[in-house]
Length: 152
Image (tube, rainbow, N blue to C red; front, side, top):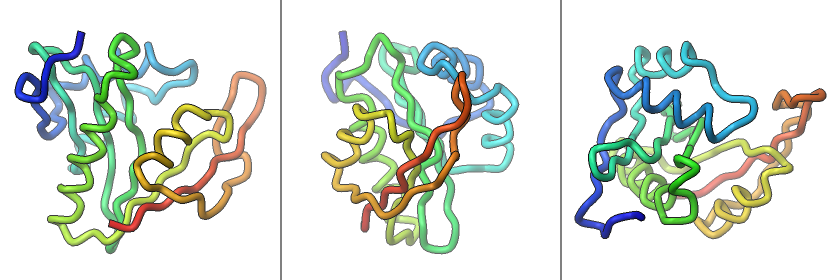
């Protein structure tokens, strides 16, 4: 069960969070980011966020800034908490952080087959602006990515 708004906490992702974050990643995806990639994002100082509920991390967003763009690289909800507003809370917190840092838009890539995520991003105001061919690895080859954008 997900608690009301006053019973969750969003903060910067730190090295101390990596074990929980990597565990969530592996449970959420068949082809997951490696522990090393997560650690490199933290070491590089990416302005990424976690959402904690009841002392446990239930979701996170990894993003980076380039010029005036926020690039959402990965947003993941613990499979036990999907559909409960975790990603919505994280993405709104990311928007606020990006705006305060002078970003004017958010871009992301999403697997063409991930219709649930695509629908979520459309509901958040993202528009499809392009396609990256063979962007993602799959268990049997590669898959294209939709490129999406949101003007902040």
